[in-house]
Amino acid sequence: MTTPALILYQRDDCHLCDLALEVLAQARAPAFDSVFIDDDDALETRYGNRVPVLHDATRGVELDWPFDADAVRRMLA
Image 1: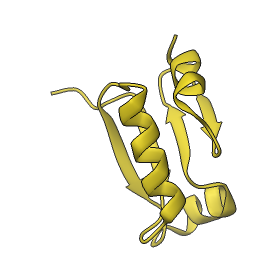
Image 2: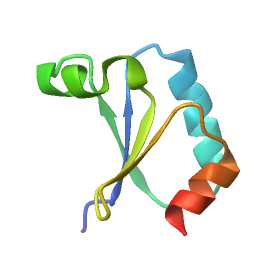
Image 3: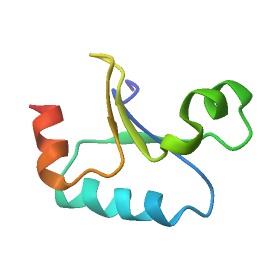
């Protein structure tokens, strides 16, 4: 099994992260990993106030919140 190229960086109990999940569903995004940054100092430093962040590990592209379904589709195109 291969690891999904998409990662959604998020926090526990994050309303914006819940909204981002809805947007990804609307955009019909392919499979992605959810990574919670709360207990990881390096990720906390990198993404802190930016979450949710959609990261394409293949291309090294990131999409910061706020984003909509069209922005996700453009990123994935």
